[in-house]
Length: 357
Ligand SMILES: Nc1nc2c(ncn2[C@@H]2O[C@H](COP(=O)(O)OP(=O)(O)OP(=O)(O)O)[C@@H](O)[C@H]2O)c(=O)[nH]1
Ligand SMILES: [Mg+2]
Image (cartoon, rainbow, N blue to C red; front, side):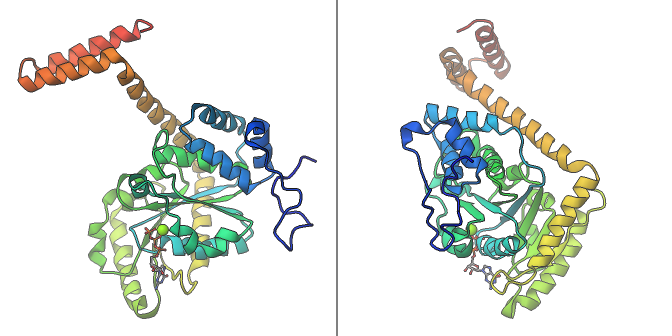
């Protein structure tokens, strides 16, 4: 049997310390080390693999690529859930309570956070670990905050790869937490199977304030903080949303987006959320959409990444960037037409494609 780095063994169930634990020194960590670690569901090595994804170091990125290439068989039966909502709506607290419920249902859960604002201040949402105290120490849960900086291909691409790593390390229920500030949650839609929009009790016309795209991307609506003095308001909000979302068309026929009430603090409504997720996934599978959607996501992702890389590579060319800036300058001076500037750009790009320049 291969060594089970950091895995719980019968010897350590009481102390949480594994006497067989062996973390190889930096120099000896090769592909086999990482693949064995993932296969043995080792959370520490999973974490190391994700760090490789974040790395700007060429050799480390190559290693990350090799690891991803070796993960041909993503286990069947995993569920990828996106949870979106405005700052402060209760996403992290909800995930702690709902995650605990999922652990009771014998799932192994991984939580990945996507926080575009943390990119700007170069800080990760470590606060989440304090909101997720139970999950942070549970052997069947894995929490990974947002990367604290730019990552190749952007956060959505990075998260997509992190999901694959988590699944190969035996996590079957993946939760992606996204702060609802704009583009990011729509991107996350392309990496998850189901999307939950978390809201809080408030006037029904709140729906006006939520970007249409975000509402359209949601498959389940949750009014969280349905407790104490806010319970009545939450019930009214539920009615308002139930009416409002009838105006939106869901792309899966036969699916009516449920609007659910939860309290993450009082631990209510978790079973309904779980049932709704399972129902939706079941429907996708019955319609033959589940696999198809993941395949389409894969294709879209490939296309998008290729276009982005193409753009970068072309502009890395000295001649292209020189012509670009000189044309932009001439346009500003009014010396040429936009059409001829574009044509010159095209000619330059074509000329470099035809040479090995
Ligand atoms: N009454 C009540 N308060 C809640 C509930 N869930 C969360 N809160 C409170 O709402 C506040 C924000 O909770 P978070 O879980 O940090 O919210 P978040 O959406 O993750 O916030 P960001 O990560 O900053 O976007 C905290 O003070 C929580 O205690 C709930 O179900 N009921
Ligand atoms: Mg949070």
